[in-house]
Image 1 (spheres, rainbow over the protein chains, first blue to last red):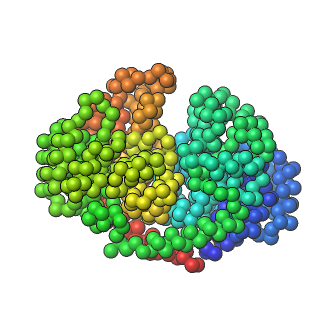
Image 2 (cartoon, chains in turn yellow, green; image 1 turned 180 degrees about the horizontal axis):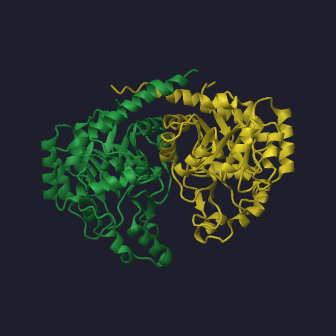
Length: 312
Length: 325
């Protein structure tokens, strides 16, 4: 186990968090992560709050370990979302895709620990002003909805680290002990994995998507909709996303209306398969516990190898 | 610190100052080498092979440590005098050549015959493997963060370095996003055996460029670089200024029909005006995302000393606490 601010705040064995992918980050996957010593997170970005409520109830039967909830502010406009999360008895929340001032106060007043997801230094400083307990610092490498002006984690992480005191979870490119050790060298105290968890055995997505991640090289994602309108996003390269890259659409979110046909129906051309560039480093579907155990074992190996470097 | 890179190049610290147009003169190369890193003179900034020979001699007068020369191979009609430059490098007693751009295979036999080590800059795993197969001694793996030409694949170092580590047998250094001791340890963790810094070395006391260039780097944020010339498939990461924004506006307006002639005003003959005269709006000049991490203008010795001290602290104190915890 690791003893640092993240494991203490989250009450977990390892400072490894599973990203809150819409529709995917539900009880089956999140409970596997929590049971393996990390922190599973339940999504709300699908907007299906009744289903989410049922998933959280299910979590209680699948794990007695801590787990969290994400509020993706751009997608959840329900004014009662804070009360909803508080009512579920969850202790840890990440907020993302919106103004950190909106929910931080009420969530903290209810006794929750709040981390905000940030893609820039300015975003980080705003979240600190809002009173968050920590940050998820997300580099441009990552999959999903993105800041249109992408900053690589190699620069973003040490930059934010040098300007804030709260603990940081690194996101984007995280997949193994090497990346975890590098993130820690740059000042992170935890890591978040998305694409690696989408392609885990317990992930509920269709095996066609998992197979596409295994087949992908590091050059097989596209960064879409950089100039808007609507959010930018990083996704696997398919015929559909290649076309969207060459001929940007005016309504990128319309592409997501058929997401479930891709996610669970396996039609890779039906919508957009959100994925990070780290897809190029994933070659095997594995159980979550194996993923986390291997990350931690390699993390130890890398630190021991680093210790053999003598600077004097 | 001892790695395959420090052993190969005969240097104290695994830190290389990459070739930079109108920056890589003898002054900076000697300062970096004297501080225990590997300084590099930019070959093509010199007008002729004779000028390069003079610059090498000048650098030799300023340091007795190893230093290198960068040779960039560009797809141009009127090719620079590469054979003459190779001759100047060999006769000048240079021990390391950093190649960049097109395949350097034609210069490998003379350089290797003279006992010179060659490190080739690559922006992809594919090119790195090619460099290894033609006999390069090491690779400088250039992530998407880097200033100058990051290629067209857009893969940053958190992905690219571990991929290179999985595939390569020859040693490699991390290039792009490198600024301090944290970057160095991160690069080592990801499988590199040293780091290359470009932009960070421009903001040093010894960099022979106009003070306004250094101040621009200190002032820049992590969001202030732009990618230009992507439609020409000759992408370059540069610091934004009015000329760069004008260039991007032309790219948007002209779309796929854009030609080099359309943007010549923003990209041709820019470097002397920026680097020597400090005319900061003159055009597009290479700058890495790492500008956001640059907050001061130290000497090369101060910079390298502090990087190694910080790396030591991170390895021995911050990270060792987690082993077998």
